[in-house]
Each structure stands twice: as C-alpha cells, then as structure tokens.
Length: 319
Image (tube, rainbow, N blue to C red; front, side):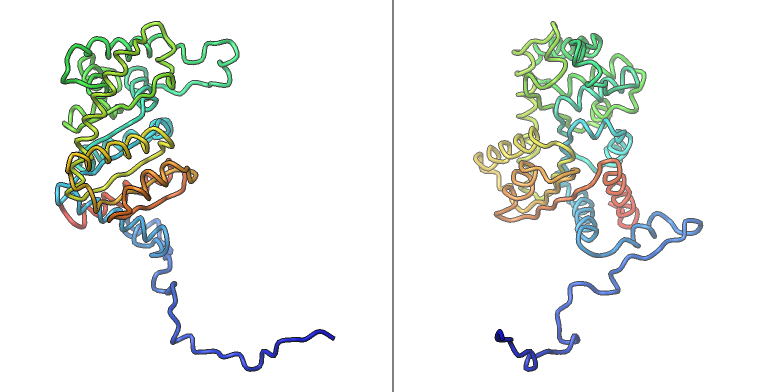
C-alpha cells in the first residue's frame, strides 16, 4: 500500500477575504440594437483584460490631443487593403493623428486607390509568368513623382506623392491617406526598403532617388518621435518589420540628441504576435518609463472599434 497525504487538515479561508481579479460589475452587458447608441455599446464591453486596456489607450490618445503631444500612427499595407482608409482619414480630419508613417507597400496601395479605385493584385495568379508587380501606371506614377521632386531638398517621399495626387486631382482623392495628410498639414512619411516593392522592379526605378527621398522622410519621422518628450502615443498597425525597426532607430537618435523621449504609450495592433513589434514598439521603448500594449485581432474589426471608441471619447470629453 502506498502512502497518502492526509487532506483533512488543509486550511481554507473565506472568499470574502480573497483578492479577486474579476468582479461582476465589470461584466459585459447586452445591448438593444433598436434603442441603444454606439456609446452604450462601447460602455457595454467588459472592463476586463484587453477591453480594459483598449479603453485606457483611447483615454491616453484623447488626453494627448489635449496636451498637444504626438499621436503617431505607423501602418503597414494591410490597413489600406482591408478598406480602412476612410477611418484613418476621418481621424486625421478630427485632429486625432499628428503623424502617419507607412511602409512603401502602403503608399503603393494608397496611390492605386486614389488613381484607379482598385488595388491588391492576385500574386499567385501572376507570379508564374513574371507579370506580378508590372502594372505600368503604378510604377510610372510613383517612380516618376519621386524623380521629379528629388531636386527639392525640402520634400520627401510621402509629401511628394501626396502633393502629386492633389495636383493631378486624382479621381479618388477623398480615399487617399497621402493626399489627405497634405490637405490637413499632417506629416506623412514613407519608409522604403529597396527591393521589397513592385515599383522597384520596373525600368523607372532609381535607387539613388528612392533612397534619398525615404531618408528625408526618416528625418521627418525622427522629428516627430523627438516630440515624445512631451508624452504621447505611438500606434503600430500591421507593420511586422519595417516600421518597428524605423521607430527604434528614430527613438535612439532623438535620445542621443538630448530629447527626453520617455513616458509615452505604445500599442501594437496585428493579427498575430510578431517579434519585432512586440519588442521594438511595445517593450524596449517603454522600459524606462511608459506603457506598452498588444492587441491581437483582424484590422478590419479592431481598427473600426478603436476609431469608434476614440470618437465617442472625444464627444464625451471635447478637446
């Protein structure tokens, strides 16, 4: 026979004396779609875990608007491809965003949307015969615009494209983040890694021009990051590599130059937990003071929710 531990003398205590993490008062509440408002729906979300975190991020964004601290949005191409331009543009017009940084794939999709009303080709269908990425108009517009504005040292990649779309009165200007940033006088920067984008495959590509134009934008972005010495918010939406790396280097430069860029909030929104956004956006930049949050979910669901929560918060607390 094996020895057994005697459980009869185990000590217990009252649940009333226990520290509990979940309170029924924080539970979600059902809503009546025929009667309740958007604000009621947002209030109905559980005040637990990521829903609580998202509320906090929204509060800090609105507070940063009031303090005129930076509200930087970094975005990958997927933001455009899932149809979120109108929401980003609405936040721009309301003064929620103070800087937009995008990778060059996002700029391509934004330009195609503005010029042609369509974007995002079927890669699987065109990679076999070598036609993938060879849409002539896209390459000619972007490479030609960069080359034309290259002599002007005061203009970078994002501004060049945004102004060209406005000057040409692109058919779908109201759907272009690049163009609307220029209209609203909000810095917009494009961060290219040469060889990653379809316009780099085409005859009009000039490596020196592309490199110089995106370098200028890196300097503009670093200036916005330096402003985080006032606090503020940095959101990374759907960039797995380029923008987390760009952000970390810009932050290093800002601190190297004496800017006390500490005590800000960062949040990463993506479908999966990528290494670089988690480490280079959420963890490392905030380890000496600040807050970092991860939100996992599809952009086409999470970003409309975030935008709606911001608008309700602004309505409740006019800036």
